[in-house]
Length: 160
Image (tube, rainbow, N blue to C red; front, top):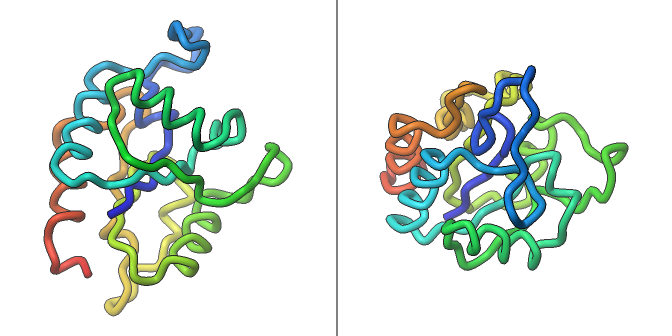
């Protein structure tokens, strides 16, 4: 199982007119409720995280794993949706997710993201990617409702 994870609007919910608080590790502070909700999903599923956030370019996978674990978000593995190294190499989120899905056709996954480009995900009867998307609201992030929807997607076979 994989969680395709964004940060801004999912884990970071600071209003755009305010400076984002920095944690002791030097990276943006995550909303504590969002951390609890993500940790709950991971505890129930033992899923791995696939970073879709644009912030993924700042650290390698080992550094991300350490950062997450130090923040109480325990997962066995963190990868990235692709190997982009700079902002110039990033595509729009929908295209990046579609490419990842094409490269991982048999993977059970959920997308947790607020990126509006994901409205362009295919929703054909035979392959509805939108059903795998937990759309968050920027100032709320990953709520209990979102957490429960993500668990429903990952744990119930009717999404296979």
